[in-house]
Length: 445
Image 1 (spheres, rainbow, N blue to C red):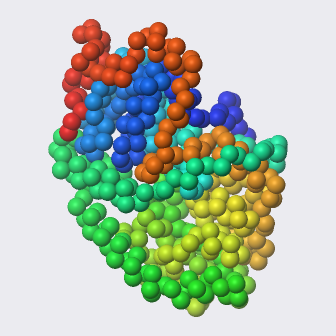
Image 2 (image 1 turned 90 degrees about the vertical axis):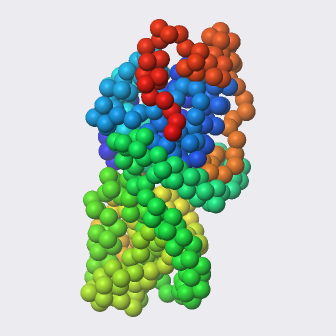
Image 3 (image 1 turned 135 degrees about the vertical axis):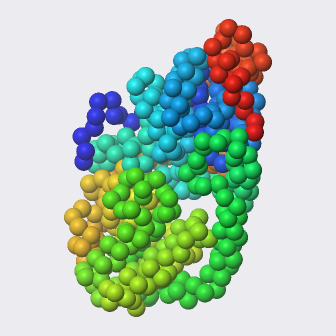
Protein backbone atom coordinates (compact mmCIF):
# COMPACT_ATOMS: atom_id res chain seq x y z
CA UNK A 1 0.00 0.00 0.00
CA UNK A 2 1.48 3.43 -0.93
CA UNK A 3 2.65 5.65 1.88
CA UNK A 4 0.33 8.61 2.39
CA UNK A 5 1.76 12.07 1.82
CA UNK A 6 1.38 14.68 4.56
CA UNK A 7 -2.24 15.67 5.08
CA UNK A 8 -3.60 12.73 3.12
CA UNK A 9 -6.21 11.73 5.69
CA UNK A 10 -9.67 11.36 4.22
CA UNK A 11 -11.83 14.35 5.06
CA UNK A 12 -15.53 13.61 5.03
CA UNK A 13 -16.84 15.69 2.15
CA UNK A 14 -20.45 16.77 2.33
CA UNK A 15 -22.42 19.53 0.70
CA UNK A 16 -22.55 21.18 4.11
CA UNK A 17 -18.73 21.27 4.14
CA UNK A 18 -18.79 23.10 0.80
CA UNK A 19 -21.41 25.49 2.19
CA UNK A 20 -19.13 26.31 5.13
CA UNK A 21 -17.01 28.47 2.81
CA UNK A 22 -18.11 32.07 2.41
CA UNK A 23 -17.31 32.25 -1.31
CA UNK A 24 -17.42 29.31 -3.72
CA UNK A 25 -16.33 29.21 -7.37
CA UNK A 26 -17.97 26.62 -9.62
CA UNK A 27 -16.24 25.45 -12.80
CA UNK A 28 -17.74 22.93 -15.25
CA UNK A 29 -20.51 20.71 -13.98
CA UNK A 30 -22.34 17.70 -15.41
CA UNK A 31 -24.55 18.24 -18.44
CA UNK A 32 -27.79 19.75 -17.19
CA UNK A 33 -28.88 22.08 -14.39
CA UNK A 34 -27.22 20.33 -11.43
CA UNK A 35 -24.69 23.12 -10.80
CA UNK A 36 -27.42 25.77 -11.11
CA UNK A 37 -29.41 23.91 -8.45
CA UNK A 38 -26.27 23.57 -6.32
CA UNK A 39 -25.59 27.31 -6.57
CA UNK A 40 -29.15 28.10 -5.50
CA UNK A 41 -28.76 25.81 -2.48
CA UNK A 42 -25.39 27.32 -1.55
CA UNK A 43 -26.83 30.83 -1.68
CA UNK A 44 -29.64 29.74 0.61
CA UNK A 45 -26.89 28.79 3.04
CA UNK A 46 -25.34 32.24 2.87
CA UNK A 47 -22.59 31.59 0.33
CA UNK A 48 -21.51 33.93 -2.42
CA UNK A 49 -21.35 31.82 -5.56
CA UNK A 50 -19.46 32.49 -8.78
CA UNK A 51 -19.38 30.40 -11.94
CA UNK A 52 -17.13 30.17 -15.00
CA UNK A 53 -18.73 29.07 -18.28
CA UNK A 54 -16.41 27.67 -20.94
CA UNK A 55 -18.86 27.10 -23.78
CA UNK A 56 -22.45 27.78 -24.78
CA UNK A 57 -23.57 24.43 -23.35
CA UNK A 58 -22.41 25.60 -19.92
CA UNK A 59 -24.16 28.93 -20.45
CA UNK A 60 -27.42 27.28 -21.48
CA UNK A 61 -27.82 25.58 -18.12
CA UNK A 62 -26.19 28.19 -15.88
CA UNK A 63 -27.10 31.85 -16.32
CA UNK A 64 -27.58 34.83 -14.05
CA UNK A 65 -25.56 36.52 -11.37
CA UNK A 66 -21.93 35.83 -10.72
CA UNK A 67 -21.25 34.23 -14.10
CA UNK A 68 -18.05 34.81 -16.04
CA UNK A 69 -17.46 33.48 -19.55
CA UNK A 70 -13.92 32.42 -20.39
CA UNK A 71 -13.36 32.91 -24.13
CA UNK A 72 -9.60 33.36 -24.28
CA UNK A 73 -6.81 30.99 -25.29
CA UNK A 74 -6.22 28.17 -22.78
CA UNK A 75 -2.76 29.59 -22.07
CA UNK A 76 -4.50 32.55 -20.45
CA UNK A 77 -6.64 30.41 -18.15
CA UNK A 78 -4.29 30.16 -15.11
CA UNK A 79 -3.80 33.94 -15.01
CA UNK A 80 -7.52 34.51 -15.56
CA UNK A 81 -8.46 32.09 -12.78
CA UNK A 82 -5.99 33.57 -10.31
CA UNK A 83 -7.36 37.06 -10.94
CA UNK A 84 -10.93 35.83 -10.51
CA UNK A 85 -10.23 34.02 -7.24
CA UNK A 86 -8.27 36.90 -5.74
CA UNK A 87 -10.75 39.57 -6.82
CA UNK A 88 -13.65 37.72 -5.23
CA UNK A 89 -11.88 36.26 -2.18
CA UNK A 90 -12.81 32.76 -3.30
CA UNK A 91 -12.46 30.26 -0.46
CA UNK A 92 -13.21 27.02 -2.35
CA UNK A 93 -13.47 25.70 -5.91
CA UNK A 94 -15.82 22.93 -7.04
CA UNK A 95 -15.87 21.04 -10.35
CA UNK A 96 -17.19 17.90 -12.04
CA UNK A 97 -14.31 15.63 -13.03
CA UNK A 98 -10.65 16.38 -12.48
CA UNK A 99 -8.99 15.59 -15.81
CA UNK A 100 -10.37 18.30 -18.08
CA UNK A 101 -7.44 20.60 -18.91
CA UNK A 102 -8.96 23.69 -17.28
CA UNK A 103 -9.76 21.65 -14.18
CA UNK A 104 -6.17 20.37 -13.96
CA UNK A 105 -4.93 23.96 -14.06
CA UNK A 106 -7.47 24.93 -11.40
CA UNK A 107 -6.31 22.10 -9.14
CA UNK A 108 -2.68 23.16 -9.56
CA UNK A 109 -3.59 26.74 -8.68
CA UNK A 110 -5.67 25.66 -5.69
CA UNK A 111 -2.82 23.56 -4.36
CA UNK A 112 -0.34 26.40 -4.80
CA UNK A 113 -2.65 28.78 -2.90
CA UNK A 114 -3.63 26.17 -0.29
CA UNK A 115 -7.21 26.66 -1.46
CA UNK A 116 -9.68 23.82 -0.83
CA UNK A 117 -11.08 22.22 -3.97
CA UNK A 118 -13.91 19.73 -4.28
CA UNK A 119 -14.59 17.29 -7.10
CA UNK A 120 -17.92 15.76 -8.10
CA UNK A 121 -17.87 12.48 -10.00
CA UNK A 122 -20.19 9.63 -10.88
CA UNK A 123 -20.85 7.43 -7.88
CA UNK A 124 -18.27 4.92 -6.70
CA UNK A 125 -21.35 3.03 -5.53
CA UNK A 126 -24.27 2.60 -7.91
CA UNK A 127 -27.13 3.39 -8.10
CA UNK A 128 -28.49 6.26 -5.99
CA UNK A 129 -25.12 7.83 -5.19
CA UNK A 130 -22.78 10.47 -6.56
CA UNK A 131 -19.18 11.02 -5.51
CA UNK A 132 -18.06 14.21 -3.79
CA UNK A 133 -14.54 14.49 -2.41
CA UNK A 134 -12.34 17.22 -1.09
CA UNK A 135 -9.29 16.72 -3.24
CA UNK A 136 -8.93 14.38 -6.18
CA UNK A 137 -11.16 11.42 -7.00
CA UNK A 138 -10.84 7.88 -8.39
CA UNK A 139 -7.18 6.85 -8.61
CA UNK A 140 -6.19 10.15 -6.99
CA UNK A 141 -8.58 9.76 -4.06
CA UNK A 142 -7.17 9.78 -0.55
CA UNK A 143 -9.19 6.59 -0.07
CA UNK A 144 -6.22 4.79 -1.59
CA UNK A 145 -4.29 5.41 1.65
CA UNK A 146 -6.90 3.71 3.82
CA UNK A 147 -6.10 0.19 5.02
CA UNK A 148 -9.41 -1.72 4.99
CA UNK A 149 -8.11 -4.24 7.51
CA UNK A 150 -7.48 -1.50 10.07
CA UNK A 151 -10.96 0.03 9.91
CA UNK A 152 -13.22 -0.56 12.91
CA UNK A 153 -16.57 -2.24 12.50
CA UNK A 154 -19.13 0.34 11.46
CA UNK A 155 -22.87 0.32 11.86
CA UNK A 156 -24.80 -0.18 8.63
CA UNK A 157 -25.52 3.13 6.90
CA UNK A 158 -28.98 4.60 6.76
CA UNK A 159 -30.94 3.12 3.90
CA UNK A 160 -30.55 5.51 0.94
CA UNK A 161 -33.43 7.10 -0.87
CA UNK A 162 -34.03 5.24 -4.13
CA UNK A 163 -33.41 7.81 -6.88
CA UNK A 164 -34.29 7.01 -10.43
CA UNK A 165 -31.32 7.47 -12.76
CA UNK A 166 -33.26 9.39 -15.41
CA UNK A 167 -31.53 8.15 -18.56
CA UNK A 168 -33.89 9.96 -20.92
CA UNK A 169 -33.42 13.20 -19.00
CA UNK A 170 -29.64 12.80 -19.15
CA UNK A 171 -29.79 12.10 -22.89
CA UNK A 172 -32.03 15.12 -23.48
CA UNK A 173 -29.85 17.48 -21.44
CA UNK A 174 -26.73 16.17 -23.16
CA UNK A 175 -28.32 16.73 -26.57
CA UNK A 176 -29.16 20.32 -25.64
CA UNK A 177 -25.67 20.86 -24.23
CA UNK A 178 -23.95 19.58 -27.37
CA UNK A 179 -26.31 21.45 -29.70
CA UNK A 180 -25.64 24.75 -27.92
CA UNK A 181 -21.92 24.09 -27.85
CA UNK A 182 -21.93 23.42 -31.58
CA UNK A 183 -24.27 26.23 -32.66
CA UNK A 184 -22.43 28.90 -30.70
CA UNK A 185 -18.90 27.52 -31.02
CA UNK A 186 -17.68 30.78 -32.60
CA UNK A 187 -18.45 32.61 -29.38
CA UNK A 188 -15.83 30.44 -27.66
CA UNK A 189 -13.23 30.12 -30.44
CA UNK A 190 -10.49 28.53 -28.33
CA UNK A 191 -12.57 25.98 -26.45
CA UNK A 192 -12.09 22.28 -27.14
CA UNK A 193 -14.47 19.89 -25.38
CA UNK A 194 -13.20 16.54 -24.09
CA UNK A 195 -15.95 14.99 -26.25
CA UNK A 196 -15.91 16.93 -29.54
CA UNK A 197 -19.00 18.96 -30.40
CA UNK A 198 -20.23 17.42 -33.65
CA UNK A 199 -23.54 16.68 -35.34
CA UNK A 200 -22.59 13.03 -35.75
CA UNK A 201 -23.15 12.63 -32.01
CA UNK A 202 -26.89 12.49 -32.72
CA UNK A 203 -26.25 9.70 -35.21
CA UNK A 204 -24.26 7.74 -32.63
CA UNK A 205 -27.09 7.90 -30.10
CA UNK A 206 -29.65 6.97 -32.73
CA UNK A 207 -27.52 3.98 -33.63
CA UNK A 208 -27.27 3.12 -29.93
CA UNK A 209 -31.04 2.86 -29.70
CA UNK A 210 -31.22 0.62 -32.77
CA UNK A 211 -28.44 -1.60 -31.45
CA UNK A 212 -30.02 -1.88 -28.01
CA UNK A 213 -33.23 -3.19 -29.55
CA UNK A 214 -31.28 -5.57 -31.78
CA UNK A 215 -29.16 -6.96 -28.94
CA UNK A 216 -32.26 -7.77 -26.89
CA UNK A 217 -32.98 -10.48 -29.45
CA UNK A 218 -29.58 -11.36 -30.93
CA UNK A 219 -27.91 -11.90 -27.53
CA UNK A 220 -30.77 -13.56 -25.67
CA UNK A 221 -29.33 -17.09 -25.98
CA UNK A 222 -25.90 -15.97 -24.79
CA UNK A 223 -27.41 -14.16 -21.80
CA UNK A 224 -29.53 -17.16 -20.89
CA UNK A 225 -26.52 -19.46 -21.08
CA UNK A 226 -24.38 -17.20 -18.90
CA UNK A 227 -27.07 -16.78 -16.25
CA UNK A 228 -27.94 -20.48 -16.19
CA UNK A 229 -26.68 -21.97 -12.88
CA UNK A 230 -25.52 -24.99 -14.89
CA UNK A 231 -23.96 -22.88 -17.62
CA UNK A 232 -20.24 -22.57 -18.36
CA UNK A 233 -17.79 -21.11 -15.86
CA UNK A 234 -16.58 -17.72 -17.02
CA UNK A 235 -14.63 -14.60 -16.11
CA UNK A 236 -16.22 -11.21 -16.75
CA UNK A 237 -14.29 -8.36 -18.39
CA UNK A 238 -16.31 -5.11 -18.13
CA UNK A 239 -15.03 -2.47 -20.54
CA UNK A 240 -14.83 1.23 -19.76
CA UNK A 241 -15.64 4.14 -22.03
CA UNK A 242 -12.94 4.51 -24.66
CA UNK A 243 -12.34 8.09 -23.52
CA UNK A 244 -12.64 7.38 -19.80
CA UNK A 245 -10.07 9.51 -17.98
CA UNK A 246 -9.33 6.57 -15.67
CA UNK A 247 -8.41 4.44 -18.67
CA UNK A 248 -6.37 7.19 -20.30
CA UNK A 249 -4.55 8.67 -17.30
CA UNK A 250 -4.57 5.95 -14.63
CA UNK A 251 -3.64 2.79 -16.50
CA UNK A 252 -0.79 1.44 -18.62
CA UNK A 253 -3.12 0.95 -21.59
CA UNK A 254 -3.60 3.25 -24.56
CA UNK A 255 -7.21 2.13 -24.81
CA UNK A 256 -9.58 -0.82 -24.62
CA UNK A 257 -7.99 -2.60 -27.59
CA UNK A 258 -4.58 -2.80 -25.90
CA UNK A 259 -6.22 -3.98 -22.70
CA UNK A 260 -8.22 -6.66 -24.51
CA UNK A 261 -5.15 -7.91 -26.36
CA UNK A 262 -3.29 -8.50 -23.09
CA UNK A 263 -6.26 -10.08 -21.31
CA UNK A 264 -7.25 -12.47 -24.11
CA UNK A 265 -3.67 -13.64 -24.63
CA UNK A 266 -3.21 -14.28 -20.90
CA UNK A 267 -6.55 -16.10 -20.73
CA UNK A 268 -5.64 -18.31 -23.69
CA UNK A 269 -2.31 -19.32 -22.19
CA UNK A 270 -3.18 -19.76 -18.52
CA UNK A 271 -6.92 -20.20 -17.89
CA UNK A 272 -8.41 -23.68 -17.40
CA UNK A 273 -9.62 -25.01 -20.75
CA UNK A 274 -13.17 -25.38 -19.48
CA UNK A 275 -13.47 -21.68 -18.61
CA UNK A 276 -14.88 -18.95 -20.83
CA UNK A 277 -14.23 -15.22 -21.09
CA UNK A 278 -17.09 -12.72 -21.40
CA UNK A 279 -16.30 -9.18 -22.55
CA UNK A 280 -19.06 -6.76 -21.50
CA UNK A 281 -19.44 -3.60 -23.59
CA UNK A 282 -20.03 -0.30 -21.80
CA UNK A 283 -23.73 0.63 -22.12
CA UNK A 284 -23.02 4.34 -22.69
CA UNK A 285 -20.88 3.61 -25.74
CA UNK A 286 -23.21 1.23 -27.51
CA UNK A 287 -23.56 3.51 -30.53
CA UNK A 288 -20.00 4.84 -30.63
CA UNK A 289 -17.76 1.79 -30.69
CA UNK A 290 -17.94 -1.92 -31.39
CA UNK A 291 -15.09 -4.32 -30.64
CA UNK A 292 -16.65 -7.43 -32.19
CA UNK A 293 -14.14 -7.79 -35.02
CA UNK A 294 -11.18 -6.94 -32.79
CA UNK A 295 -12.22 -9.48 -30.14
CA UNK A 296 -12.87 -12.15 -32.77
CA UNK A 297 -9.45 -11.53 -34.33
CA UNK A 298 -7.62 -11.67 -30.99
CA UNK A 299 -9.48 -14.78 -29.85
CA UNK A 300 -8.90 -16.57 -33.16
CA UNK A 301 -5.19 -15.76 -33.09
CA UNK A 302 -4.93 -17.07 -29.53
CA UNK A 303 -6.86 -20.25 -30.33
CA UNK A 304 -9.79 -19.54 -27.99
CA UNK A 305 -12.45 -18.29 -30.42
CA UNK A 306 -15.07 -20.70 -29.06
CA UNK A 307 -14.45 -19.61 -25.45
CA UNK A 308 -14.47 -15.81 -25.79
CA UNK A 309 -17.82 -14.02 -25.96
CA UNK A 310 -18.86 -10.41 -26.48
CA UNK A 311 -21.96 -9.15 -24.68
CA UNK A 312 -23.47 -5.69 -25.08
CA UNK A 313 -26.47 -5.84 -22.78
CA UNK A 314 -26.88 -7.74 -19.56
CA UNK A 315 -27.55 -7.21 -15.86
CA UNK A 316 -24.04 -6.72 -14.48
CA UNK A 317 -24.74 -7.77 -10.85
CA UNK A 318 -26.31 -11.03 -12.08
CA UNK A 319 -23.36 -11.68 -14.38
CA UNK A 320 -20.92 -10.96 -11.58
CA UNK A 321 -22.61 -13.37 -9.19
CA UNK A 322 -22.40 -16.13 -11.82
CA UNK A 323 -18.76 -15.44 -12.70
CA UNK A 324 -15.56 -16.88 -11.28
CA UNK A 325 -14.06 -13.39 -11.17
CA UNK A 326 -13.83 -9.98 -12.79
CA UNK A 327 -10.85 -8.61 -14.71
CA UNK A 328 -10.91 -4.86 -15.31
CA UNK A 329 -8.77 -1.77 -15.66
CA UNK A 330 -10.04 0.37 -12.79
CA UNK A 331 -13.79 0.58 -13.28
CA UNK A 332 -16.11 1.03 -10.30
CA UNK A 333 -17.62 -2.28 -11.42
CA UNK A 334 -14.79 -3.63 -9.28
CA UNK A 335 -16.58 -2.31 -6.19
CA UNK A 336 -19.79 -4.01 -7.37
CA UNK A 337 -17.89 -7.27 -7.75
CA UNK A 338 -16.42 -7.02 -4.25
CA UNK A 339 -19.88 -6.22 -2.91
CA UNK A 340 -21.08 -9.54 -4.36
CA UNK A 341 -18.00 -11.33 -2.95
CA UNK A 342 -16.51 -11.94 -6.40
CA UNK A 343 -12.71 -12.10 -6.92
CA UNK A 344 -11.31 -9.06 -8.73
CA UNK A 345 -8.10 -8.47 -10.66
CA UNK A 346 -7.30 -4.80 -11.30
CA UNK A 347 -5.06 -4.05 -14.29
CA UNK A 348 -4.80 -0.29 -13.70
CA UNK A 349 -4.63 2.12 -10.79
CA UNK A 350 -7.74 2.05 -8.59
CA UNK A 351 -8.18 3.42 -5.08
CA UNK A 352 -9.95 0.22 -3.98
CA UNK A 353 -7.07 -2.02 -5.13
CA UNK A 354 -6.09 -2.71 -1.53
CA UNK A 355 -4.37 -5.73 -0.08
CA UNK A 356 -6.93 -8.30 0.98
CA UNK A 357 -9.66 -6.95 -1.28
CA UNK A 358 -8.39 -7.52 -4.82
CA UNK A 359 -6.12 -10.26 -6.09
CA UNK A 360 -2.38 -9.86 -5.73
CA UNK A 361 0.16 -11.48 -8.00
CA UNK A 362 -0.16 -11.73 -11.75
CA UNK A 363 -3.09 -11.97 -14.13
CA UNK A 364 -1.64 -15.24 -15.44
CA UNK A 365 -2.00 -16.76 -11.97
CA UNK A 366 -5.44 -15.26 -11.34
CA UNK A 367 -7.18 -17.48 -13.89
CA UNK A 368 -6.31 -20.62 -11.93
CA UNK A 369 -6.39 -19.18 -8.41
CA UNK A 370 -8.81 -16.26 -8.13
CA UNK A 371 -8.50 -14.89 -4.61
CA UNK A 372 -11.66 -14.23 -2.63
CA UNK A 373 -11.89 -10.77 -1.02
CA UNK A 374 -11.69 -10.46 2.77
CA UNK A 375 -15.37 -10.04 3.50
CA UNK A 376 -15.24 -8.22 6.83
CA UNK A 377 -12.55 -5.80 5.64
CA UNK A 378 -14.55 -5.01 2.51
CA UNK A 379 -17.80 -4.40 4.40
CA UNK A 380 -16.05 -1.89 6.66
CA UNK A 381 -14.31 -0.27 3.70
CA UNK A 382 -17.56 -0.09 1.73
CA UNK A 383 -19.34 1.61 4.61
CA UNK A 384 -16.37 3.96 5.01
CA UNK A 385 -16.58 4.91 1.32
CA UNK A 386 -20.29 5.65 1.69
CA UNK A 387 -19.78 7.72 4.81
CA UNK A 388 -16.87 9.82 3.56
CA UNK A 389 -17.31 10.28 -0.19
CA UNK A 390 -20.84 9.40 -1.35
CA UNK A 391 -23.95 11.57 -1.46
CA UNK A 392 -27.43 10.12 -1.93
CA UNK A 393 -28.13 12.23 -5.02
CA UNK A 394 -28.33 12.09 -8.80
CA UNK A 395 -26.97 14.46 -11.42
CA UNK A 396 -29.78 13.55 -13.80
CA UNK A 397 -32.65 12.19 -11.74
CA UNK A 398 -34.60 13.30 -8.71
CA UNK A 399 -33.24 13.86 -5.25
CA UNK A 400 -33.15 17.14 -3.43
CA UNK A 401 -30.39 18.91 -1.58
CA UNK A 402 -30.21 18.77 2.22
CA UNK A 403 -33.08 20.80 3.65
CA UNK A 404 -31.42 21.89 6.87
CA UNK A 405 -29.35 25.05 7.07
CA UNK A 406 -26.46 25.16 9.51
CA UNK A 407 -26.63 27.70 12.29
CA UNK A 408 -23.22 29.00 11.37
CA UNK A 409 -24.17 29.60 7.74
CA UNK A 410 -27.44 31.24 8.72
CA UNK A 411 -25.68 33.56 11.13
CA UNK A 412 -23.06 34.44 8.54
CA UNK A 413 -25.77 35.17 5.99
CA UNK A 414 -27.58 37.51 8.35
CA UNK A 415 -24.38 39.29 9.32
CA UNK A 416 -23.07 39.77 5.80
CA UNK A 417 -26.37 40.51 4.11
CA UNK A 418 -25.64 37.90 1.44
CA UNK A 419 -28.73 37.00 -0.52
CA UNK A 420 -29.43 35.11 -3.69
CA UNK A 421 -28.30 37.39 -6.46
CA UNK A 422 -26.09 39.53 -4.22
CA UNK A 423 -23.11 38.55 -6.38
CA UNK A 424 -24.83 39.74 -9.56
CA UNK A 425 -22.59 42.16 -11.49
CA UNK A 426 -25.46 44.66 -11.50
CA UNK A 427 -25.20 45.18 -7.74
CA UNK A 428 -21.40 45.24 -7.55
CA UNK A 429 -19.41 48.28 -6.64
CA UNK A 430 -17.79 49.94 -9.65
CA UNK A 431 -14.52 49.77 -7.74
CA UNK A 432 -14.68 45.99 -7.41
CA UNK A 433 -11.82 44.67 -9.62
CA UNK A 434 -13.90 41.61 -10.51
CA UNK A 435 -16.45 43.86 -12.21
CA UNK A 436 -14.06 44.51 -15.08
CA UNK A 437 -13.43 40.79 -15.52
CA UNK A 438 -17.09 39.86 -15.53
CA UNK A 439 -18.10 42.78 -17.75
CA UNK A 440 -15.53 41.69 -20.30
CA UNK A 441 -16.72 38.08 -20.33
CA UNK A 442 -20.52 38.12 -20.60
CA UNK A 443 -22.10 34.76 -19.93
CA UNK A 444 -24.48 34.12 -22.85
CA UNK A 445 -24.27 32.60 -25.25
